[in-house]
Length: 173
Image 1 (cartoon, one colour):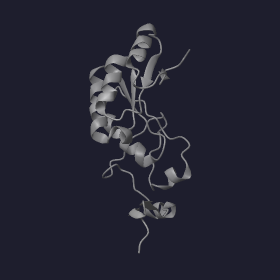
Image 2: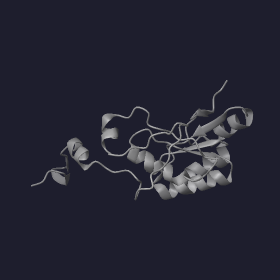
Image 3: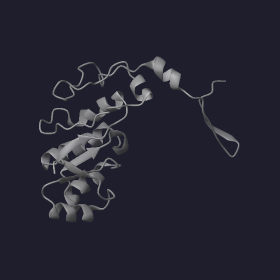
Image 4: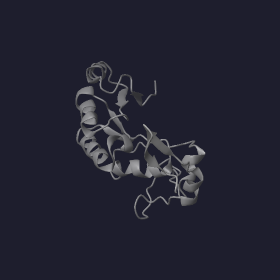
């Protein structure tokens, strides 16, 4: 078997199950948990679940700060940090930031076949080099230029009402 990891064999909060499987299986490491909603959930999975790969979605975990905390904890505990991103290159550029520069953390989830919306949102894209590696741009911010014309093409007017009271509207009067 040439598998690198077994991803999410259990619900992410099943730390005991992850830990038991980790103690029984040494050849294929477990991976999880893109659904971590905060740093502590990811830490618990690494500490008690025995995962060898921690997959973090920057949006779900609360941004770059908590994701960077997870990347640093992973590096300190010999767990490989992997971004969890398969949508837009804007999201990809953000999700790589927490582990950029961590030499031994080189696996990157990459949006191979993004939907047209995900591709259209940006004028610039991160493409793998000949070795399959992603190099971050040195342009300001995330290094990705948002295509505002494309964003406008995808806008949909929305109004939210509850009990006859308008709570939110994108419709201009």
